[in-house]
Amino acid sequence: MVDWRTFSLMVDSRTFSFMVYRRTFCLMVDRRTFSLMVDRRTFSLMVDRRTFSLMVDRRTFSLMVDRRTFSLMVDRRTFSLMVDRRTFSLMVDRRTFSLMVDRRTFSLMVDRRTFSLMVDGRTFSLMVDRRTFSLMVDRRTFSLMVDRNTFSLMVDRRTFSVMVDRRTFSLMVDRRTFSLMVDRRTFSLIVDRRTFSLMVDRRTFSLKDG
Image (cartoon, rainbow, N blue to C red; front, side, top):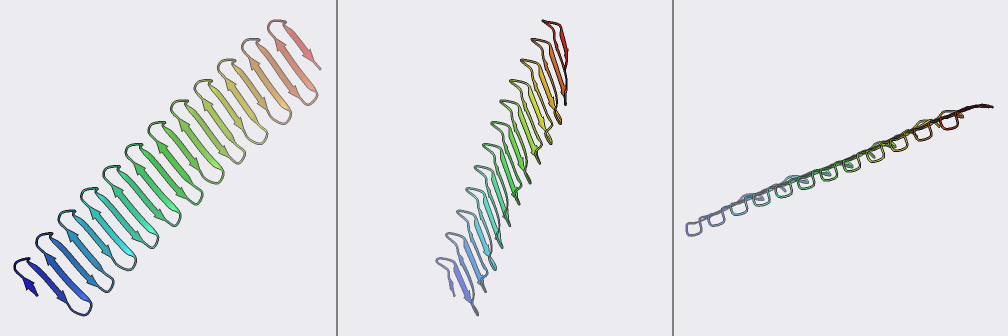
């Protein structure tokens, strides 16, 4: 059937239909759960085939694909991208410049405003923040923390810890009842190993062995 006033065409043959309309410039094809639709005004395209769909829209510049729990979405205004595949997701946003990836308890997040990065995988985490310039890493009772304001560093690995602080210039190490502490103001040094201890202080210039 053809209508010259509307310039429309429709064909139907065993669940197959084809329709064209001039004013909206739309095209629709349907064949065994397969459909295609195009519209000039919105420039949208949608394809569906056995739980597979694709949609494109010119105004928002968005694209969405879904195939067996897999989805992809892109939006021009926010420049966001999201992919999900069996508990795997990726999201990117232009305004915040954030990236997030999650895959079996693994996550990565980046944010431009705070410049923070966080990675988590089997009790492993990494966090970086631009304002405080802090870094923290944790992996099986191992942690590392750095902060720009205090310039402190702390490492812990099987009862082993190191701490450095810029203001007091103090250092402390502990490993199986062994400790070392240094302080700039008092210039004191303390070493303890089982029943042996050594302490030095600049002000009193004292040395003790016990």
